[in-house]
Image 1 (cartoon, rainbow, N blue to C red):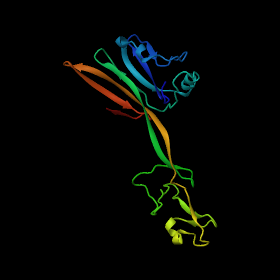
Image 2 (image 1 turned 180 degrees about the vertical axis):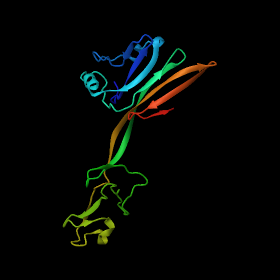
Image 3 (image 1 turned 60 degrees about the horizontal axis):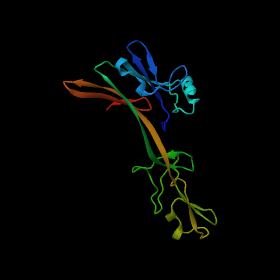
Length: 209
């Protein structure tokens, strides 16, 4: 089972007009890629799920989850006994680091060009609302933008000690996953194999690889 919902399903088109769907349009059972009769294959296509099709497939929790993004483009590839189908998909998983601004409740990413407070206790500046960590007197609540702004690093009003209020410096990690679909063919010319391969992303964009 994939760790990421599918946005595309395949259809195999045969030379006698028959078609084999990855998910049967009548009972929604899933066919294996190995079920395709490569000798009869004349076209192979990828299509986005419409909402009704996706809902019907997802009712069976044993299947790979799918999602409906009907505005994605379809892709098709003509084949013959010279062109041999290549199709597979890769699932990628990575760790993503981000910050959450507690002032405006928006997420942002910190990188080498991000703005920070010029301080001994530096913190990122939120690109959405301009907030950053503050230093607050534990006794009277006086607020300082930087630790250095407090005389002798104590509250200028009551000489109380300061505590850091973390607005933007909290860093979080979450798992990020995505699928890339690879569609193409292999052809033999003068005894040498040549490949044409296209990478299709989950947003429907494609590039030759």
